[in-house]
Image (cartoon, rainbow, N blue to C red):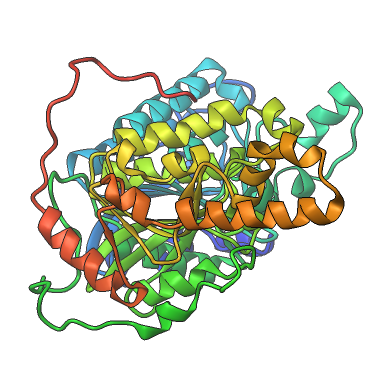
Length: 501
C-alpha cells in the first residue's frame, strides 16, 4: 500500500516512516485510511489514489498525545484534492476538540489541478481550522519537501515551522512562474530553500540539517510547550517549591556586563545563567539576530525569553526584530507562558531604509504585543534602555508586573554623548577644539552622573528594585510564584483591538 522505495529514491523518508520516527514507538493509530479521491476528471477515476495521498491519525510524543498528518509525495505528488484537504481539516478539528498539539508534515506538489475548485475548497477548510486552532492548541509544520502556492498559507498560520536542508522548498510562486513573468532565473533552493526562510525571510522557526534531527527537535519542542490553552496554569515538569527554599545565587552573572558601555557581549551567557541547565530552546535563531527569543525553564517552570543581543547590531531594534519578538510574545501570552525580558537596547535603528520599510508600523507591533499581553511579564534591564526602545521592551508603562535593573543599567532618552551634543551644540560651536573637547567631556560626565543610572527610574517607581545580577534567577522564580494566581483588571469592553500588522 505504501510505496516506500519510490520516496527513498528521492533521498527522503516516506510519509509513514516520518510519522513513526517522530512519535513514540507503536503509538500511531491511523484515521481515514480507506478514504480516497471521489472525482472522475482528466484521466483520473474515483478511488484511484489510496488514502488520497495523506496519512492522518494520532499518537504520542513523550507520552503527550498529538494529532498528526503527513502528505505522501508518492501518491500523485502529494497533491491536495478535496478528500485530502478534508482529511487534514478533520485532523486539526480533532486536535482542537481533544486539546492537544497538531503536527503537519508537508510534502506536496500543491493543488490537484484535475479537481479544480474542489481542491481549493480543501485548502479553505484547512485554513479555517488553522485559524480556529491558533492560540488554543500548538500547531507545528514540518516542510519535508515541496510546499508551494496556496499550500504555504497553512504553515504560515501555524505557530512553528521547521525546515530541512536540501529538502524543504517553500514559495508562493515557483521559479518557472517567475521566469515567465519577470524573466528572472532563480533556482528553487535560492528562492525558497531552508536557509532562505531561516535567515532571510523569517518564515521558518527551526532550521535542521536532516529529517532525523528535525524530528528530534520537534520532540524537544513538544516537551516544553503547553499542550493547550489553560487559564492561569504554570507548565512545569517538576513539583513547585517554595521560593524561599533551596536558594542559589549565580555569581557568574555579576561579571558578564563589560565595564565600557560600548563593548559587546553575548546575551546567551546571561540567558544560560538564569535558566535551568540545558533548558534553553532558541526560536528563529538565524533571523533578526539582534534579538533572541526562545523557551527555557526556571526550576522546572516553562518561561519565554525575549532578549536584546548586544553582539549583533548592538542589540538595536529594527523592523525584523520587532516582528520576531512581537509574534513570540503573542504565542507566550496565548498559552499563559511567563515572559521574561532581558533589556539592553540603544534604540530603534535609524536610517532611510528602516523608515521606508515601515519601522513605525513594525515597532508598533512590539509595543502592542507587550501592552496586550496579560500573562506574567518580568523585565530585567541589564544595561542600556534608551528612548522609545526602553518603553517598547516591556517597560512598566506597558504594564510589566515587575521591572528590575542591574546596577549597570542606563535608563535615559539617549546616550550621554548624543545628549551632550544636542543640549550644548550651539555653545560648543564657538569654542576652540581643546575647549570643546574638555567642555563636552564635562557635560557627558554630568549627564552620566545625573541620568545614566537606574536610581532615577527607581525613585519614580518605573523600576521596582535594583538587584544584584547573581540574584536574578531566584528573583524571577519568586515573582512567578507570587504572580501564579494573577488576574487582570477589566479593560475597555470591545470586540478586539486593531494590531498594526
